[in-house]
Image (cartoon, rainbow, N blue to C red; front, side):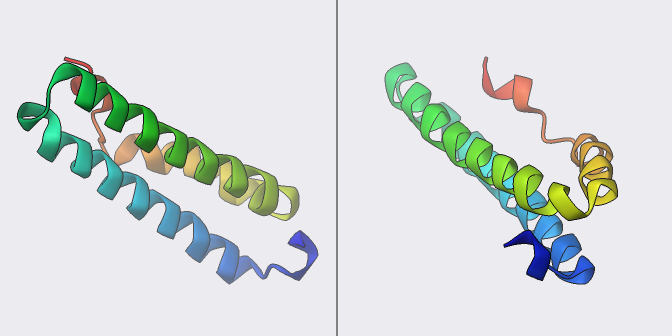
Length: 89
């Protein structure tokens, strides 16, 4: 499957995943104060699984042909300042 993935498409997918991850984090931050601890823990679990699955797919598919794109992903993710530890308060 990765053999049919063009570089520009791979880069676009990585940017899409980063944007989606940021939106998921914002989703959690918006709901943090209006949910019980149990409800919010459940939301974190669901969103965490979604984010993990997306990241795994990017590493598997994009990384198999374009390792440099995945390596840049690590730098880009930290620059977005998602503030994930803040969610755990």
